[in-house]
Amino acid sequence: MTMPADCEADAARLRKALAQALAEDGLLAEPAWRAAVETVPRHQFVPGFYLPGERDETGLTAWEPVTAELDYDRWLTTAYSDTTLITQFDGEEPDWKSPAERHGGAPSSSSTLPSLVMRMWADAEIAAGHTVLEIGTGTGYSTALACERLGSAGVTSIEVDAHRLETAAEALHGCGYTPTLAVADGLYGYWPEAEFDRIVAACSFRAVPPALIAQTRPCGKMLLTLSGWLYGYARVLLTVDSNGTAEGRLLPGTVSFMSARTHAAPAFGNPAHWAANLPKTGRTARHAPERITEATEEAFHLRFLAQSAVTNAQMTTVGQTMHLVDVVTGSAATLAPDHDGWQVREGGPVRLWERIERVLDAYDAAGAPGPETFTLHVSDDDQHLQHPQMPLLPLPT
Image (cartoon, rainbow, N blue to C red):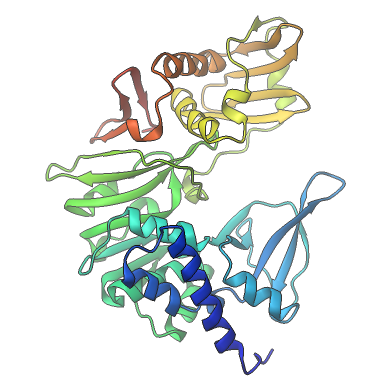
C-alpha cells in the first residue's frame, strides 16, 4: 500500500499528542525522553498488529488484525495510542499481506505500551553516557527510543527470535538507528559487548540469570521483571557490587511481561488426571483462592509472594474448582467451594495450598507489606526475598 501523502504529518501530530499524554502522567520528566517520544515513528515498527475482541462461543479471545491496508486511520491512530500491540502468537509470524482473524493462542511478541517502555527506561536510572543492554528487541520501538536518548553506539539489543530481530533491524536501520543487534537468549546476555552500565529486560525471568550479573559493571544496575509459573510478577532494580552479588528493592505497581522462552511454564496435561489421585476428602481452607486470583493490585502482589513458596506450581480453574499442579514433584491440590467456604484436597510430597497459606498468614501478620518493602538478595548459590517480618522466600535456582 502507498501511504497517504499526509501520513508523516499525521504521525508527527499523533506523536506529539502521545508525548503530551505521557508527560501529563509524569512519565517524561526528562526533556530528552520527551524528545525521543516525539521523534521515533512507532508506526514504522508495527506494519500490522492484533487487537483483542469478544470471546467466541468456545471462550477463546477473537483477535482482530489491524494494518494500514485494512483500515489506515485505525492503524495509525492505534499505533500512537498507549496500548500494547500484539505482533505474534505462539512464535509464528503472521502474514501481514493477508492477515486473518485469530481465535485464542498465546502472544509471543509485541510492541509494549509506550507508558510502560518509558517507565522501564526511567526506573533503570539511565543517564547520558551509559551503555545499555536491552533484552527483548521485539519490534524495535523501545530500542529506537533508547538510541534516540543515548545514541546508537551506547545501545545493544538482543532477541531470541531471529525473524523478529530481522524485522526490527530493518525498521531501525530504515529510521537511521544503528545499535548493536544480535540473536541471543536473554538468559545469557551478550558477552561480546559486556560490561554494561545498565541491563533492562523486556521479558520476565523466574530468577535472576547469573550471566546478567557478570555482565554488569560494578555499581551498575539491572532492571528485571521476575515471574513464575503462577503468573505472579514483580519488578526489581538490582545494584551489582564488585563481588558479583546483587541486591535491590522490589518496585511498586503492577506490570507483566512475556516470559523468557526458556523460562516458560511446561505443559502439565489434564487437571482431571491430577485430581483423580488426590484424597477423596480434605479440609476447610484458611484462605480462599481469591486472595491470589482477584483482579486487584494486592492479589497481584500476593500471587508473586505465594509463587515463591511453591516455585514449580501452576494454576488453572475448571468450572468453580481451582487446580494446583507441580510437574517437578508430582504434587497437586484442588480448591472447591462448599458450605463451609473452600475445601482443599492435597496430595504428593509438597502440600501446595498449605505452603501458600503460610505465606498469606505471614503477610497478614506483617500488616500487608507492599512490594517496595521487600529486598531481593542474589549471590552465587542463593536468591531470596527478604522482609523484616516475614520468612525468607526463595526464587528458583
